[in-house]
Image (cartoon, rainbow, N blue to C red):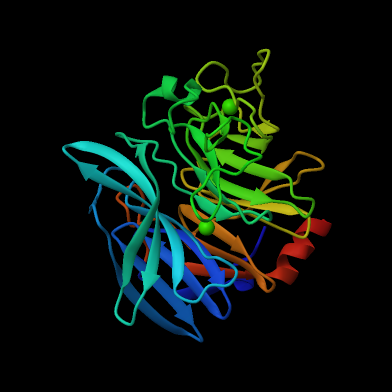
Length: 327
Ligand SMILES: [Ca+2]
Ligand SMILES: [Ca+2]
């Protein structure tokens, strides 16, 4: 376990933070109410994001995923939930930074189904420079098995919003299907993609995502098997992790846990999952950098018990992680 003395508090009073990104000297954090916080050389600035649609305040919704191209100057990508004619949707957009704010400047994909719960919302640029997006089943489980629906999928697109020529289904963004509510994506050094997924009452999953495969929801859960469907690499059995963001460094996958309060380490060789950090409440996202592991708590969205200074950005040095891995 990481001890109290082994981590630092980098920022406090974040408001419903969702995702962490690092660009150059800056750490960016999305906040579900529609802001982006930047932390640079101990300075914290918060800019509003001007969006073309009315941000949804449904549970688990709002301004969610963020991704930055490697040549970032002022254009990035974001995933957000919105309301239109009393229907809930999500879209992935390009956002542009100006002096005073961020502004929506283009739409990459629209009308991803939203619902009462299960909005997905993690977006990451993969080692192949494609944009990967997790979507939830929007609380309509059968949509996850419908290859024509964008709900309950992992989606893959080019950064110009076209469909990659090597996607598994012709003219489709769908990369894998049969997901309930995946909220974490990370690649190992060999380019293997793993995803976390919220299961139905426990049975939370870590899946090795292979192109075009079906991950079973709502037909199989836990250890169940079925022809043509993938069983998770590991799942939480009768326990609850409520896994959200995931990251990879030095041979280990680290993932945030909400109801299972803390950070867990998934070892892809042993397939073991170990709680390595706790006692700060719910954790929404983690990000590994050259220096170590950043994590954001998630205690201010009504489902947690906020402590003084919540929500907070925490940092665990890489040497502390390496010591854990060697044990
Ligand atoms: Ca991201
Ligand atoms: Ca599954």
